[in-house]
Image (cartoon, rainbow, N blue to C red; front, side, top):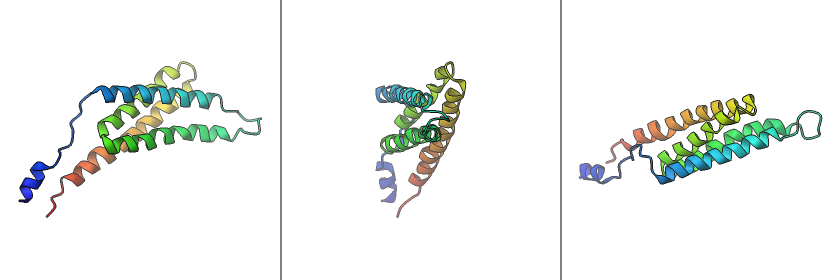
Length: 132
């Protein structure tokens, strides 16, 4: 009886590029570009709001991790699309400002590796545990 339950469970989707994946890559690219533009236009030292520059750089973590977790709960492949689009946007932006572009690219790849370990390794391991 337990074997039938395991067979009837919905199996993990394999990596398959669909239209939603591509749409989320584009959305991630656009949000990343907007985020980097806001970082560039945050006041520097000398203005009363120069401390916002630190929060502007930290916003990359929040605009990648939070949407990635929310999207990943529905479908982990779609979350990969969002975060890949976000990371790739840093490369063309590095022609305008190499620091902001590469910072976005490297930080997003780090977050991607963390999300990959959480969504792919941990959840797949948890779903393989047999229940009685």
